[in-house]
Length: 330
Image 1 (cartoon, rainbow, N blue to C red):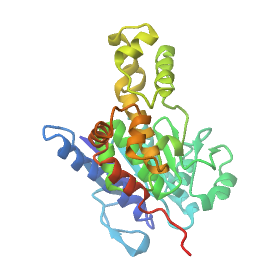
Image 2 (image 1 turned 90 degrees about the horizontal axis):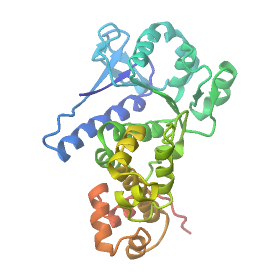
Image 3 (image 1 turned 30 degrees about the vertical axis):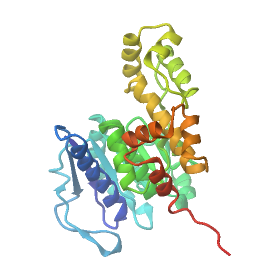
Image 4 (image 1 turned 90 degrees about the vertical axis):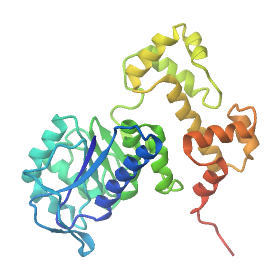
């Protein structure tokens, strides 16, 4: 069971609550569709200060599933953006601090959306750590919290299990990233296709991380990642990688998985898929040329591989990824 909770404040931005919860609900449905025998389920819930209905932005009223006193533990906590003046969040600091501190102690993931980073900063949880916020309030944040390392050019920041995002679009990117970590790339791909693949940014492109994908102390695994990154447009076997590093396939797989949380094959597949998506979205290369560049023997083989991992044909992905791009007309 993966539990995702959104904490609700008066005048919270509605979409910063509903969108991440909807994405996780879609992940649960995708998991069941991909594997009927899967035991992984997703539970979403809202938490208020009390059980009384709360009016959020747009005059929408939500009755929380739980109050702070009865809130169950969650794997992921969402702190929604505050509509308008984020300085009002200071009033909630003492009320929310025990819950968020305990969540971090339990190794839960805490994600602030937009101006909710003001709340984390008021709690002192961002001191000396990277953070971001909504672009309109960057200067205000910097003036009130000089001890926080504000990342003005990043839409997402990560410090261990503490994430800040600058916008609602960015929380969608982050949720897809977390779904991939917790539920696998196939579920993440299914969710990504459902929630506008044409506008989504790759997590690594938007995020500032205290610890990235190479933040481990296994030099051999780092060498393996560098070797694979340099061959992201080639078909690579485990034997080829192991031979290049002069280690057995079994030991390499064990060390790679321990250091990165994924196998060398999955790591290379993800990199190769990123290359394929980039070529389809950003170039006019034919499918034959794209398949050749990625080391496939023919377009049909490439199409089968792409659809098996992305759940769309290359042509459908190209159309979807370009579907909302604006064009100049005279």
